[in-house]
Length: 455
Image (cartoon, rainbow, N blue to C red):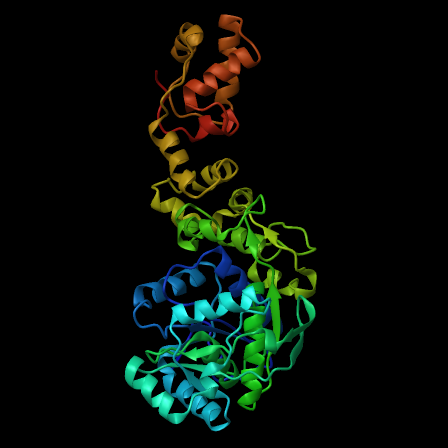
């Protein structure tokens, strides 16, 4: 079953470049997921190709509709529309047919070892200085022995029989790779309970859907080698594979333990701007400078896997916030006018309010804070030694309305009356009017105030 996405290519001629992102709807997307999704999306967009969102939902116990919906929401928030949506749970018949083909070719066999037995075998091999790979004991079983094991233990797992030869390909990031299949265990493709695993489901999907490019993490390199053989056994040519480096924490520490705090939905709720996140993730680990890019189209135009290397890539979420602030600083009024109107900002001052606010915010949540200050006034900050001075100054403050000259006229009058000047004059008054030590030019603050400041 195919579901047309928000940027469907239905009705157009077939496109030469097809990529996919295949998350499991068993949790929320995090920064690590985004890197693979973004690379595949940008490759397709740059080539005018097709980007498939493919939900790996073959695990019925862990996959949920809520997580699937959350994945789509996150991608839509980022502006990463898919051309079509596929669900692996709709394609079980295709995986069964592929399994039958492999059985017919003598490349698929059933095995019954328990996890404990496999662990003991691995330990023995390591003690003997041998690679800890599956010993293919199941291939030596007679039909009678298989029947006995099936009666005793139920259905076994199904393993793909690798050809023990070197598997070679040119990786889009890592260059020429070669893996000796004899150093790899025959992969389990179907579990004893009948659940189809990612390794074969992905192979069938990629070939059926005409996927031409696959970018994923470097932890998939061995998996790629086995999938290349599975594709060949099914009579298909492998797509172009590329494996990006894995992300680490800012000090090079493993990021995996922190991914729960780096869910995209949490970053979004924290005020992260989409283009800040995309700009950063499209450049870290590459030879290109990390800088704010204006649009996804611009990101795609400059994207090239050749810019990326194999070294682990350090990621620090704190690097994203300055970019988010820059997005807001560069956002024109027209793009936030509805948001400003929803706060109740009068139309006649809304553009001026945004010009002042955007230069002094780090996230969108702070827009409302600035409007509350202008609308309701601030809680004054007054040092004990400045109390008498501020009281005298406030007594000299004229009534509303204020304009761009109010601050200058008021402070000049206060200076003349009190003898204060410079920082001793301006800072106590700023803190008393705004409740802050820093912020917009006070001339701008005064002309936007909707109430007269009081102590």
